[in-house]
Image 1: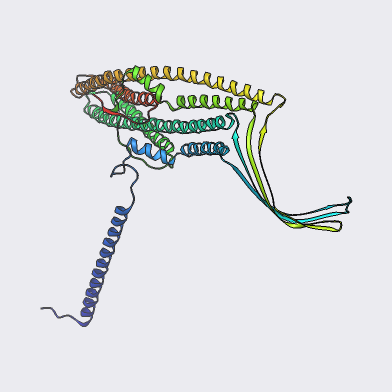
Image 2 (image 1 turned 120 degrees about the vertical axis):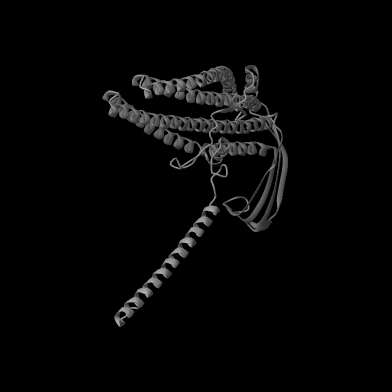
Length: 466
């Protein structure tokens, strides 16, 4: 048994004390760590997620809804609609009586006269009412023109809405295409790196020349460059989608992959009929033509008289001095019916009528041109859809065959019975087949979106690819 000297006892005691303090500090540190983690977890759970699913992924409908809320063009269209309603309200005010009131103080001084100078002081208030009784359609036609113009503004707002929806769809599917191509580039890079390892192993074993290794290295570098370009294109596509939604272009976004889900499109004849009935710009053109016809009638009514009823009541308080006579100023009123008829205006009304008729003919011609454009666009987009659908089926088969050829070429090379050139050729074919397949999916979705917009439909009628 060892005896501890006093200095040793002090040293051991100090060491035990330090260990206890260190243990307590460690326990405090762990408690603070758990507190921070708990607070962070609470903040994460309480933090509002972006529009989309519970995992904050945006579906196409989420993106469209966000764009309709945030896009400045939607606010501009709404402002135009409200302005049209304001003009309609202005035109309807002519049906109602016009009431005006006034008040004031006046002094009048007239020198001379049979009884001497006249001096008047008065305080007066008046109320006047004017009501148009009949103006031969001038007010009614002007109101119809304004009402139809307001309807035209509403249809124009609908057109802007469909433009926003189409722009979102185009950017959405473009981002999906870019993400698919990133997957192709990443997979191809992994294959190229595997080829490089295999070629290097054969070279080290002395069974293959150095040419295979250098060719594989060039292939790896090329695939790395392709992946960089694909990632950059995806970033740009994400910025474009954010911009169509009215969000910060640099914001991160995660979307659902719906390239293989497309609208169920009806027959071509039904599409044409729906387009001519539903297109907001075509309906706007019809409203503009009707408004122009009402404006012609309103201008022609300026040739005719107008009958109105007017009345006025004046409250007055004051005095009038005329020489040696002095009297009080009293209340007064008047009422009557007025008939006004323009006799000569220097051709003003004639010029306005001619201008209104010319504007209507211009609108009719523009409506007819728009109708032809709609029909030709529908035929083109329908043909694009049919072509893309056939290409999807062809490219689905081609990419499967290309993948099989690549596997065969890789197997022959790994067995030492096939040249490396066969592997690279098969890989190029596989990349092209994958890229063409993704492109055909995008082309179909874009043609479908254009066709739906040409039909006057903003919604997405979804159906799975068969």
